[in-house]
Length: 481
Image (cartoon, rainbow, N blue to C red; front, side, top):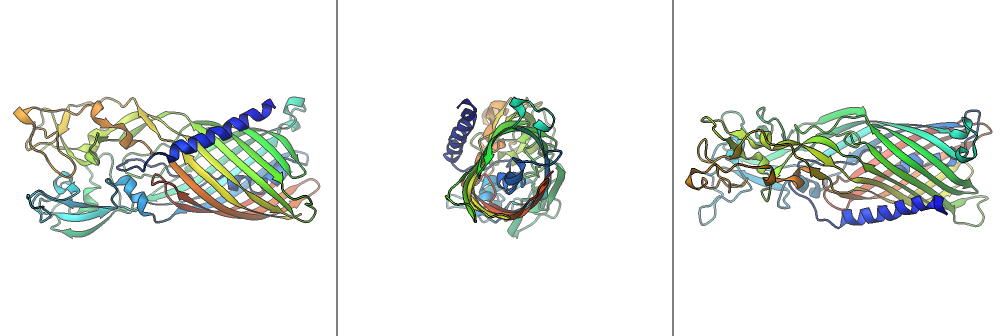
């Protein structure tokens, strides 16, 4: 009974983690989003493969499989709100001297144009529509350990190495509409204003950003407890060694390959059970696949807002003792190196299989999700600075991204400290995707070698706005020998 305790604990932890992730509200004004890796689908990894890998034959008792995949996001208005604020899909940017005013002559807008280096009579509307495309290959090699050591406690164990290679293309699809009174000098408009050369971090690009890398090396040490008469119980421990680089904070929504260079440890469980009494012609089976990986902390550059001031990273700042006309972009000072304590990533699928001698079809439902990141130990800010006031050496600490407040009283310079940073604004929000999938394929069982060929499709629908809605297709070719 003890050998089944770990799988039971994993299932309970998964259900608990999913609940804690789902109960939180949607996120806004975030500077980082962790998107689902295209290769992160336990359905594609297990489809057909489970038929041959747990009962390897041949002289080597080994197996290989290759899975090319393609994933693309779908338009979803909620996703844009993750990067904007106040639950809005677009923002009005206007200067102090525009027509957008109420009866008290106070500007009605979301973003003050002057903060971005635009004219006081400029006006325009900005919107984003995050889009992503991924494609790549997954290679897996599996080796039964009894080929090397025919000992009782390793007789049913195997070692697998999985190497995913992915190309990720991101585009925040920054657009501007209803632009009036553009600048005569740079930046001329909103597109240029959010991609200024003087900004070291937090830029918003209007073009594709692409990265192609080996994502990671995943090592599985597993045990096949049972694999006969359509009953399968398989459990393995997981070690994820990161290879791809960390996210680049220079641009908002920059592409990330894999788990953002986090080391991972976890476990996986695969179960199949026969449902019909006579499987001679067709066997109907229920299956359940689960993988849970805990990602280990690392250090990254993240861009933060000030507490209760969304998009305050785009304010202009004054440094103490500054010379005239030396306002500093807020992103240059509010981007700090921090310790990122990430989430538990869960990939779960359950469904039904129909199996004949050479064909297998399956469909089902699943989830993919992760918890909330925690940001700790933000590095000290090297200079004394505050929100820019009316002149060098003056601050206006009550300012927001929409309005510049009067200078602080008595010419007091009010500095920004680490305690003023909203750590959550630079952290990835928790996500929970519901997945529907279909797959089919051909199995050829031989005397010494088994081969498989298949294809599958899935669509992920996010529960909240912290993840993209994506569809995914894949092919598979594998063999044991």
